[in-house]
Image (cartoon, rainbow, N blue to C red; front, side, top):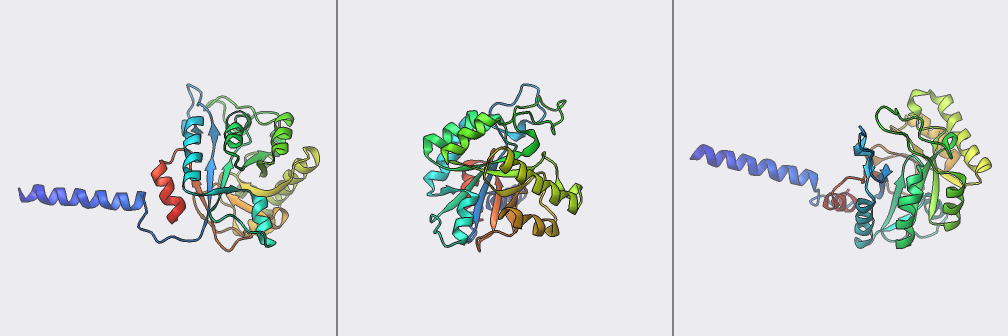
Length: 263
């Protein structure tokens, strides 16, 4: 009998610890700017080995509605730069960032943004515009089409979508070496601005957080830099508060609430 009570107590303690870590409502509120990061939006192909990268349009809609219900206002990198010049941000700013620059952003995400009259940022691979995600292994999942010129023109006209550079392709810049990485970031910005007529004020490091010395060189080229690495992002930014990247695509709503309100 006593062993059963001890075992029950241990299980309850483990459960309480797990809940405290998974839903950190006990944490003191800290000033930070949540960056909700999403991957592919839509339905994963039947034989995909990358299903965890996908978020359904229904799941995304629920997360957008949850963020708005909690009183957050989606902003863009341009809003951050304006804040540096003294323009006030809304009381509870948050960033919505969509990786890869796939055409599903135009088909699935853009209508949801318009319906809610909110902003988001989409990341682009400069040499893949109007093509497909050639960086992905097709044996793991069928290639997806990327945003084309017509899509980008409409997104730009809407003034609801901001554009960030991933690089020329979706490549971890840490593997390239500092000089080559800086060149790729600069070339990516130039192509998007000169060839595609897009304003680009942010760089989103693909695959991994950058080396500090690399970001120190790339950040001034854009003004805002951030990465997909989950957790507090201490890269330089125009605000005094740190950015916190959260992989929000498959995170439960209650865990998402705890993360964006408590840190």
